Amino acid sequence: MSQTRLLRMGMIGGGQGAFIGAVHRTAACLDHGVVFAAGCLSSTPERAMESGRLLGLPASRTYPTWQAMLEGESKLPAGERIDFVSIVTPNHVHHAPALAFTNAGFHVVCDKPLVHTSAQAEELRRAVAAKGTVFAVTYNYSGYPMVKHARHLVHTSTLGEVRKVVVEYNQGWLASRLEASGQKQADWRTDPARSGMGGAIGDIGSHAEQLASYITGLELAEICADLTTFVPGRQLDDDAAVLLRFRGGAKGVLMASQVEIGRENDLRIRVHGSKGTLAWRQEEPNHLVVIPEGGPEQVLRRGNAGLCDAAKAGTRLPPGHPEAFLEAFANVYNNACHAMRAGVGGIEAATRFDFPGVIDGARGVRFIERVVESARSDRKWTAV
Ligand SMILES: NC(=O)c1ccc[n+]([C@@H]2O[C@H](COP(=O)([O-])OP(=O)(O)OC[C@H]3O[C@@H](n4cnc5c(N)ncnc54)[C@H](O)[C@@H]3O)[C@@H](O)[C@H]2O)c1
Image: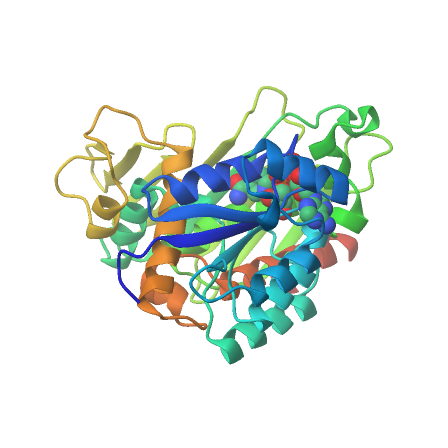
């Protein structure tokens, strides 16, 4: 395959009224390497067809169900059918299409949390290994250039040995019972049948877990979790506090909340090593604070000289012109698309091309399961 070949993207979910689907379409196509070619965009056939029409898809490439899309696209000649499908449905509609498209030989980009259970994640892992396809999970925060540089600083031992990681993702939008109003995104996120066993811990805690793992490379050994449902009548946690013990002796704290009034998308991380500290916040993503022992505090900025190659590769604009959520999301797509164009798939592709893959997705699912298990067993330390 040519390195410059345009890839054709299909999408499941992301229709009228949806949140993240539009972000995926924008991000995938940001650098002109992808065209949006087909979709089954909504949960009912009528809305799915209307959503496709509103987005300008040809009727022949708009499908009433994802199963019809799989069948229709599979029948097209290789030069016309989609190269990959992006799955941007609520969590309970991840596993079946991800498995079916992978088994049919399509590359897959799936949003997080990957699936509901570790057994489902393992099924996907085996399918990806067997088919040798590319499988990306959109843990988009690892696409930020300054997050990539933070990872570089840890991996080049600039901070020394990592001792402590403090990671938080706090929001306030579910501080009252928004789901009772029928608000679409609140409705499924607070329903265990559609969201999975985690509330805030699954929806945003899983991002925090992946961010800590991506930057530090540390593996969790044990966790001790306290989950709370503050809003009466809600079925899933809306607040989580988790103590972390990593293999090798480092420790940490992870917090995730959707009831912290005033917080918007306050994802932040601090990594404390034996020689220094780094700190990053997603609401100011172009800055990375580094404090060597004895100081002084340094603020590294996206686009400046001296950043690692991965940070440079994920940067489009000169410093001072802010880049943010969409560009970081596009960086995840770009790296997955490089792997597709290079014809490199399977389990190793994610590490080699620097994008979150099925292994990261599976680790996230296991983390959610163990957190819930710990919380239910009266906050027992639980092996991960
Ligand atoms: N990476 C991120 O930063 C991020 C941010 C938000 C959401 N997400 C994840 O993205 C996914 C979607 O979240 P959202 O907030 O956009 O949800 P949403 O409710 O806004 O949109 C879901 C879309 O999926 C469609 N859908 C549902 N069932 C379908 C089916 N069987 N076939 C086709 N379409 C179907 C719905 O009609 C809707 O268009 C979730 O897994 C969520 O966790 C990730």
